[in-house]
Image 1: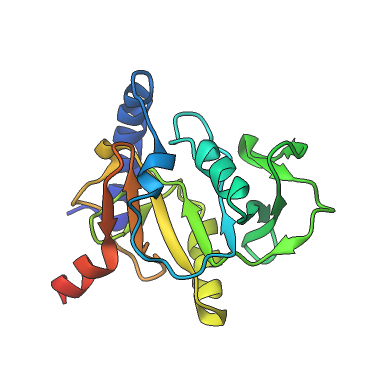
Image 2: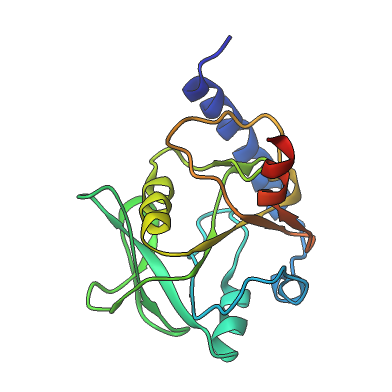
Length: 196
């Protein structure tokens, strides 16, 4: 039987190819989906992300949230400690392309602590177990954030990225919700409680 790291690598390779194909011919309206969102309490600051390649693009939703009074932040990769720091972002701000081709706010942008984070992913299970690119930035960041304050996480996924066979390791931090390209919402917390 394959170890979790080997299985994750295999799933990652397969799903990235499928995601690339899916993104070529798809209509997505996350703004419309947002109106059907679960009750998330008072959200002040939303941590988004700048899409890489065929990742589902959250920028129209981020623009909508900004226009409706939410503060936005984008992640910046840190080397020590290993994780992300979120810096303020407003639509139209100049971004810098950094490691792995990720677009990030300037280092002078103020640090923010989002109470809701939109999370990119390669694949995710209905229980919210996320497969990323394997570097662990989001797991490290979300683990620390949850120890300090109440933070909600929403994975943003193409329908075909939802899979039952995601291996789970001790350091993996599950997501609270997933919103899909077709506007469906999954409450991953409820699925995990049902599995208990």
